[in-house]
Length: 110
Image (cartoon, rainbow, N blue to C red; front, side, top):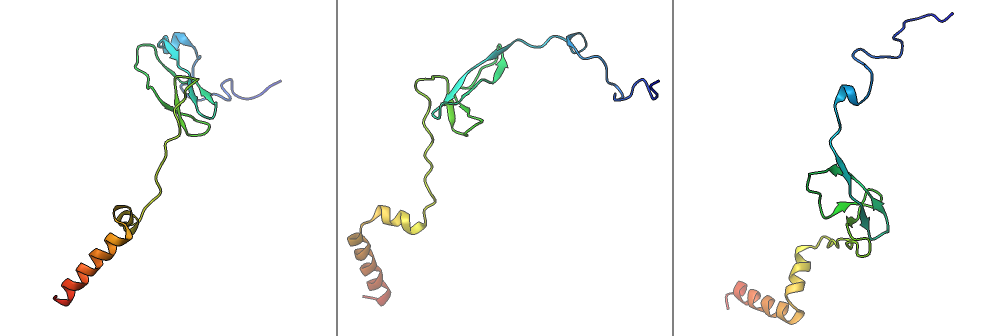
């Protein structure tokens, strides 16, 4: 004969699960997003809510779009550049030499 409490395995306040207790669920719509890697994800949104044009793919992290044939491409991020790298982009070697000569002349008082 089994012994123990009739509510064994339950927690206080636990009741029957179902729509009657919680009310009706809001109408939902599934929107499919496709990434450049070929993954498809379908999050659900409230029927009357605005859904985003792009969604992050949960499998690879790339942006996913609504068009399966033309998914958005991966966003290119530029690597960190030093101050010197930015200066080298703006000036060529001859310009840099000219600026150096002018600065040296000012320091010498010419």
